[in-house]
Length: 93
Image 1 (cartoon, rainbow, N blue to C red):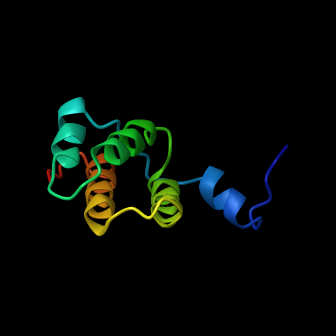
Image 2 (cartoon, rainbow, N blue to C red):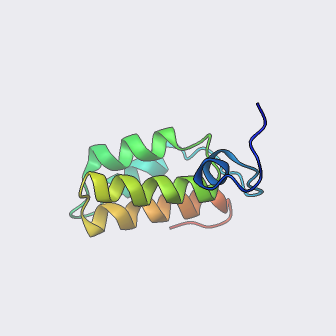
């Protein structure tokens, strides 16, 4: 079944994003998860499972999950940095 271009959120999350993300290494994820005031499990789980998403979908999921699970600002910042690392291979956080 084709998804119409103007179908809202479903198209945004599933859709035709140009900017794919690479899978972060274990050491990159551990470095982000070991920051002060960061919930290690949240960072490890989110970053380990976002590899199939594009950048926009990962950011939408982060926003939704952050509110739903009431993640700390430090945890959200670590996840945002992880998304940036995954979308730009030359960037080191």
